[in-house]
Length: 636
Image 1: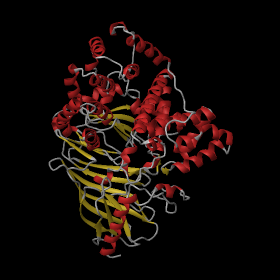
Image 2 (image 1 turned 90 degrees about the horizontal axis):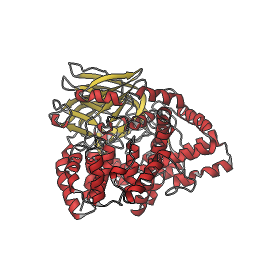
Image 3 (image 1 turned 90 degrees about the vertical axis):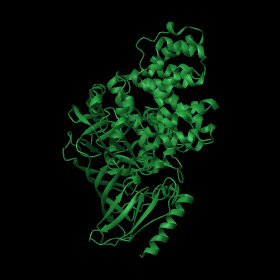
Image 4 (image 1 turned 135 degrees about the horizontal axis):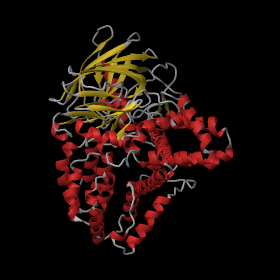
């Protein structure tokens, strides 16, 4: 195929993406599709509407990265060698790229390959079409990233805890891997990888792979990931980091000034691993470590295999927020091991993980703890359903999403997480926990290192748990959960004795009791969150002042509580709290906290004007995932 043909094909693909993003996953779902792994040459993947790539023709089997980290220029420079599985003797390899400078491409015989970059498509970048032959076993792409790559955040030394060295971290989910690696950026495509990363001496480089625990004075680090992973799990961080073991096969990395606090906070991590293995089988990735990143990290955590990325906002000093670690650990089975085939199937990743997280937390901390989390989760879910419905997006309250033509980041809401979890709880209730645990262990074992889509999961559920029992299937109401809006009529109604006590105090306060009279002894984060959410929109300015005077909530050391409290302060324009709110917004980059606070400010003209002033100061410290969301909230 000549260069003109490549160009024409690239243009056709780009135009198709603009219109319907190559093809509708729904039509692909109607085909008989099976799983595909890095070594499977016969089975097919459903077409991913968020990718230009063609893995059903040519798939990446292995990737080797060789990259230099330039903090001065804020770029990665080097190459990626892709070992290929050309299943159909195709002449064109299609890869996803965005914001990349492609210098040259070599075939494995040393010949320079012809290639063409397609039209730029919003969110999705450009198709990289490379001419190959049926005998081509590998291609090596020489490239550099853009300083504005949305996956990479480059931090100055002033933006770190230690203030002595710069810092770099990546965030590839959902489709940002293509902004730092030319790849088949689809969750259903899995491959092994290795890497050589060169950085400044005195800094430690880590990846979602095997990692060293000490700095190398050469600044050169080598990595291996022998299990197949998806592109969204490609991860890199470089900084002034130290390590401490927390058990048999786990530990924590953090900046030196943070390490002691992190070690204390995560003391139960080995117990979490042991509890998870007891439930659903052996941990498949060898080592489980956590690296605590600077505050600008946009998520609570990211489940990169072998190396969870975590926000420092969970370091509360009382271990009250470590459910996040249980959640990211659970992804080692649901998501990393059995992966959603496309982003429309995202609930298969997060719904399973929240369910699994709750089981871990119940085993370690007891049923009352789990009940509080579950009831708070239902509250969050109902709030999200109400918001999406009000915005005319009722279809986004389905578990199976229709994200074709949209940024898959739109699907990262409580629907996938909480509605998915409550659907699985509904199945558990219908069949019994013992049978459901046996089923889940089998599901993770038999589908390990493979992608899964919604249609295949329902067939697997029927074959391996429901066994064609029509009455049992009817009681579960799977279609209503997966393809219907909101909550079905058989949704669980979680209860918590601990939170019933909080309801009593909410009523007392609303009926005129002063804050000092409230019974709050031994309240945990979950008690306080339930209390604040139960008061949302019902407080007067005087009541807010009273609560703050007694409990000093404006200066709480707990970021979860601060997020909810600041929203109360904004609602009644409690100006005494605004300096603290500004400090919070300029020092924390976690989108979960930023978005509701900015949304509350944007509800009034004066609040929005002030929020824009704060955002100008805060934006340099936000990752693109966060500042893109905030810009949308503050748009005129």
